[in-house]
Image (cartoon, rainbow, N blue to C red; front, side):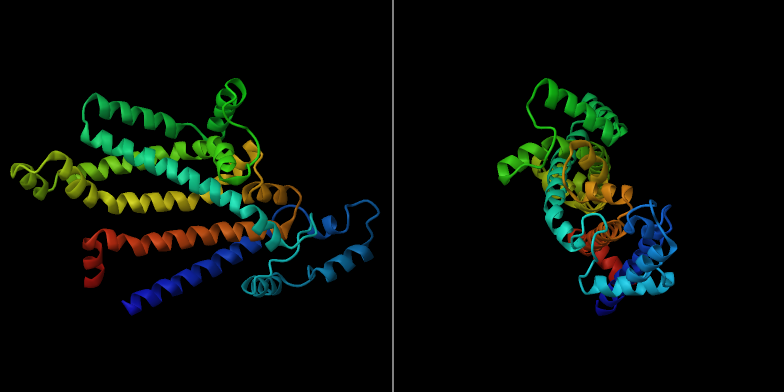
Length: 316
């Protein structure tokens, strides 16, 4: 167990290290010179001025040296200063991250409840109910998130006026009210995935011999579904829910832009458009770190839900 834990931590650190280098190098490989932006544009730009800017922000150093300096500062929670706003990047992330986390959390609740519920219903009630659930979730999964956002804004925001179409709201009730349409837009695609995984996992668990034995012994069908089928199907369901939730941080870019929400997704879009490299690097690093941590947590929780996985790993 200790060796597996050490290997997992070492793998986590190595993955974060590699991802941070790719993020740093790819952002600086993007078109545009940050020195020109920092100097105030190309108007009246002299070689002496741009050389001064490069020296001030260490842009004249080799890429590896710049990366080492940036990584050392990140380890010490110093993410630099925004080229555009002039504020500390950490302060910008701290101000916007709660809104993004609330949006991801709301969307997760929606797709877990609706997706798992639809999958269980399709597995238990075969026939036309199964076909209807599969058809509806397939349709929902085929619609891109930005198209779903536009449709929801047009119907529930403009025509019916039930929900606001911009902003993140204040207070718990206001936040829930404002984030309902964005969260639903994000949850539609995930709902289709989770319902399919739940349905298949339930069908596989229902085909086990012990389920037939329990049914032959007269155990009520409700108890069979809850204790013998759903419980054995939780492993892949929880795993897929965790992976989808981890990937939703990147999905907030489109949704926050469509609904005018001040989160880290819209912050990333603005940073890319204005060549605000410190902000773009910090947001991308945060997204990758969140995804890696979430997938690691899922890997740790999975053996607790399925003892067969724990036994298999112990045998290795």
